[in-house]
Image (cartoon, rainbow, N blue to C red; front, side, top):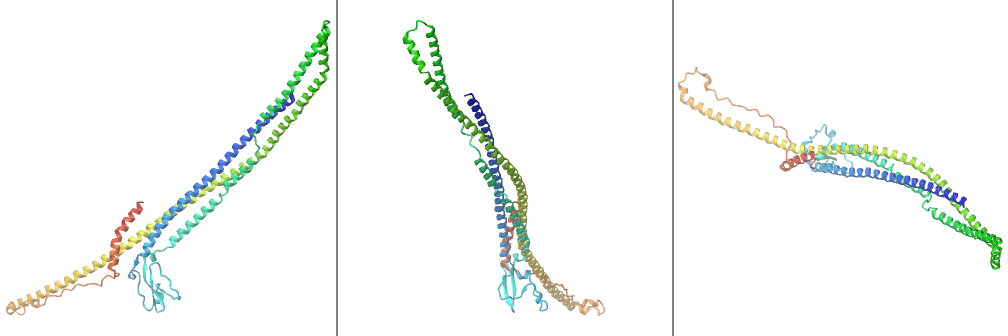
Length: 433
């Protein structure tokens, strides 16, 4: 029983150690699981930022497309850009295209006319004068950067699941330390104690019997029936001793169960060493994954910063082409103003010439009347120039300024559009649109 007690102490100590180590390993597994979850959350935050950027890009692209579509709908009269080629340089005219048997658009909103086997562009739109290479370059750079971000995020797609799988595999090998051996030890100790108490009771009865026999031997006056009772009790001693030996065997038979419990706890402790090795491997993997995730997140922030800068480029292009459209509208109004100025100046000069002609006619009549009344009395050699006719006043009118012909519909259209575009540009610059 003393040996069993020492083994029981070992079992309790080993189980406490196993439980302490298992609890520590479980805490590490929980920490690793939390790290894996955090990695997933960090990755999802970057993905969410990328999605928000995608939504912003869609807005910027839509705004730019709206401006480009508006420019594509704005027809520019051919007098603004087309110079009729001479017969000598007709082949060098950039607006003459060689026929290929297939009708091709000359640009958004443009129309063509076939002349002598060649197609001659008759109209163009504002969009035909926009160099869209800058837009394509900006979009290409944006696509490249966006693809870089996708590739970067793809490199961490399985990091969380790899850690979680490692934790699951390692935790699956962890021994179960929840079943405390205390209850079993109590049962085994109770079983030994019952046998031990029974042995003690038998030994106590034998000692009492021996004392009675000793007393009866010394007592010469002992009754015969008492002596017979002691003799019968003495005859039962071999049976009682056999029972004591059986109880001793029961106690000894329980002892291997204590040893087995100790071996179980020792095996558990040995098994935990393998789990701890797996935990060390997990720690190394976790450190590498965290370092990679930090680098990926840093690179992703840099790429997102560049992508937002590209959005500013798109916004600058939109603003430029919106201003371009406004400038065209104001150009039409400016050309109309110049045409009206030129016409008014010419009309003013024509009116002045007509007035001067009328004044000269009146001057001639006044001079003729003067000669009719006074000419006969004046000496011939006095003031010879007095008979000269009034000089004719000449005003030189140069050639009219070469301005394109503007249709009233176009002038009315841009006159109503220019204020709207001006207000819209102000709103765009101040961030209200």
